Length: 174
Image 1 (tube, rainbow, N blue to C red):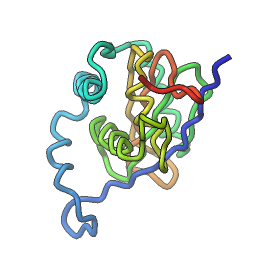
Image 2 (image 1 turned 45 degrees about the vertical axis):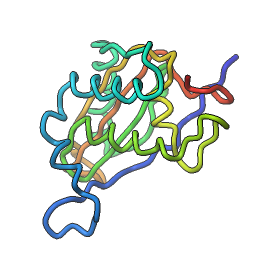
Image 3 (image 1 turned 180 degrees about the vertical axis):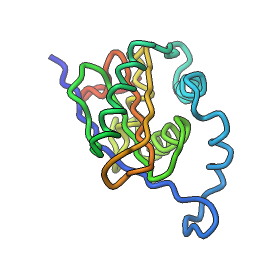
Image 4 (image 1 turned 90 degrees about the vertical axis):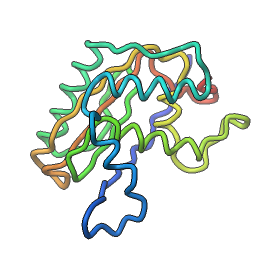
């Protein structure tokens, strides 16, 4: 039986703009325009997947999106940040600001530099990236909500789900 690896969840606090101490904020303004649509989330995932293989694009799943949205709203109302017990692959992203899907995807994509396909080894965190490029995953659905409680209150929680699940221990993503 294949065992899926539970991804260590990372939180990113987006802090660009006037008075920001963050040096690399050049991407944020570009990403914010149009970053809330399902099409932009799907297109960006597929662009990332095409970097490593071209024959397995994801399709948007309304049922996965609904499930991700319901869970995002649950997290937002409780102030929590934790994975659900689900049969799907799942990436989470939280920010103290109001952001869209592309900011989350951009964060997960930056884990690419920590993944070595030749050795199938990760230096640090790379499970969000490997779930995005897991070749056997064929469907994607994402949800977004604004936190109403907890330390991220007023910020964003983004949940993306993948079917079938990826990140099986000892297996390469493609």
